[in-house]
Image (cartoon, rainbow, N blue to C red; front, side):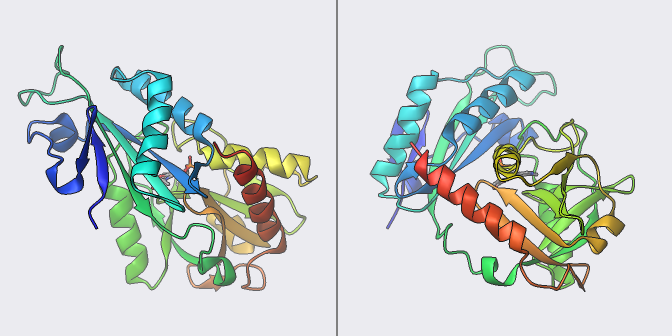
Length: 284
Ligand code: PDD
């Protein structure tokens, strides 16, 4: 059955939603996006995603076409219209359509689109096995903190990882892991310290990452925000990724080498449980 999607104020069957070939999202990847998880028909961590959306648009000088209240209502409405129990909402705002020119157009009207994807986000089979990841050079641009739709390199990295039999890529730059292709990368050292890269222009400021650190603190798990090397990752007791759609997901192999005992880590699974419990309780 076709989904109902949102396009610039209209609710349309997906096959009727059309965007101009002059849209700068299409021509220049001049667009930002957000992905919000849905569980039990409710939005997970919506305030964080809404705040990052505002930041991304501000960094690029794109005007958000709807108010904060309308944006929340659109998210709720798309879940209702598509009867989404579990899955995600994808939102994109491009600068809009204009004649092709590298300079930003003055009066383009931003294009706002949203669609849903139903997906069993809680009952993820990778929780039991963990993900295998391959280390791949990070060849993305220098403003990864802005959640733009320039996702070609992360796609290429993921394909490169898949060609070695891995589930995902962890990206490496200047001798340190930056993040996963579409998630934040974390390790837990043999002395039990969670290590995750500090915030900068080099990584996306993960909404799940921030909550995981809050939850770790409350649970008495110590953490350090600093870059870590591939060697530290190979030597770690546990590893995991975090994102809006994976929550907290164990990584059990890096470049074909088992992480710790090769099974999902105890602390990782505890963080996953605490995260899911807290975020479902606070879903809106
Ligand atoms: N990706 N880093 C990158 C490069 C990402 O693309 C994502 C999310 C994250 C985690 O951010 P958050 O915790 O706010 O979801 C980190 C989304 C899920 C995606 O592109 O589908």
